[in-house]
Image 1 (cartoon, rainbow, N blue to C red):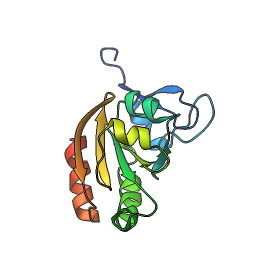
Image 2 (image 1 turned 120 degrees about the vertical axis):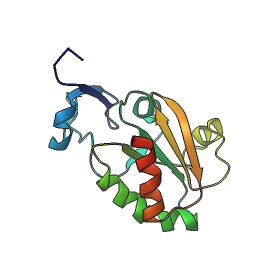
Image 3 (image 1 turned 90 degrees about the vertical axis):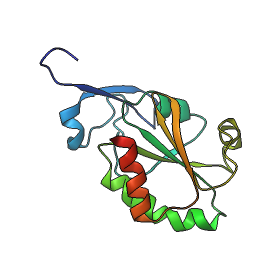
Image 4 (image 1 turned 180 degrees about the vertical axis):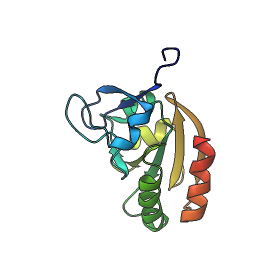
Length: 149
């Protein structure tokens, strides 16, 4: 950041993995990827896979909160609407993403995910905390607020 200048935020595009820099005051303006035009902060959970997991979790200056889930998991299904709502509420302060553990077992194993749903918070590419078990809207909101403070 230049002295007295605007702070820039780096965000990786979940579609093409391009690294995007933008002034922090422009986060409210629904920024798009400079390479492919995908919304960088869509206000909905982004889908992660082996192709975009590392760039999204390591090339974002915003905390990245990943919901490790599976389609057959009842608690995961119960928490999904709360996670959707939180993605909209925190769209400019955190990246909320989902990783299907059935589709990407190697990533789940690498992070030692033993129960689902499990939320893992990444900052600077490193896990900083995790929460196992389904959360209601209020609990999820408190958890996320604790990570963006």
